[in-house]
Image 1 (cartoon, rainbow, N blue to C red):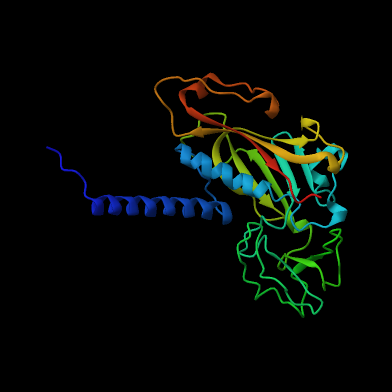
Image 2 (cartoon, rainbow, N blue to C red):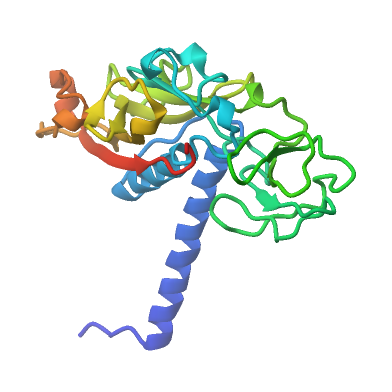
Amino acid sequence: MKRAFTLVELLVVMAILLIIGAGLFYAFRTVFRQSTTQALVAKQEQDVQFITSTLVNELSTVGFGIDRSKLQVLNNGTNLSDVGNAVIAINGSQIAFLSLATRRDTNAGCWGVMDAGGNLATQARNYLFKDCDSSRWGLPDDTSRVVCLDPANKALKTDCKNTLVFFKGDKDYPADFVTRYYLDSSPTASKLCASGTLTLFKRVGSDTSQPLVDCVGAFRVRYITNQGYADSVSDINSLVGIRLCMLLQVGGRQSMQSNIENFTDSCGGSIVIPNEWRYYRWAKVEVDIPLRNIR
């Protein structure tokens, strides 16, 4: 007869699993937040969920800490080189946008309210509303490490009293806060990847591009306007969000072929699926991301 687990044994097993799960989470988070030469490979659905949630969190910060003069789109929002004067541009499998929340700094995405005396009147918090350490911001004497915006209209201010302040550190605003996501080949891509897949890269400002995820079959971002999904947008006031679309390989090659779920029309329609890819498992990602920092 098989012996049943005691409550203590079950608790021990659960604790071990939690430790392992937490270790994986922080390991993955480290890859996304630190410079690395090796990207993630989705080996199970949990990995896909983590990758997706991380991308959604970053893409949702479009416009965070950006002044009113740059909260616009130019050339129908399709010219990536416009970003810096514009807040966002999307072209095929590439997106570029402005945000003060995507750099690899513990204070990235942190903000606060400055009072009439030049002091922070509130606890500094990041865009996820977690407390930040503002001791190295230099306030109130030095305002060179923050961007100061008028709370009424988001206009850029040189006098930071009675403004919203956003941490930028010693980086140049806005050039060092142009964030790009794009697909490209990678010399360090995993050997598990199906032929024809690419690596998703992230680049912030002039920093070295960072490989994030290997074995990507497709990566698309589209605009969501008040008229629906679109590849271009002419007016920032009609832009309400973006649609993230990805096809991620999950695990290695299998002995049997399987069907692959293709993109819907909201992601720009289906892609051509190589027959070789049917020997792999795939996860299709389609998610709408509201943009709350562009008004």
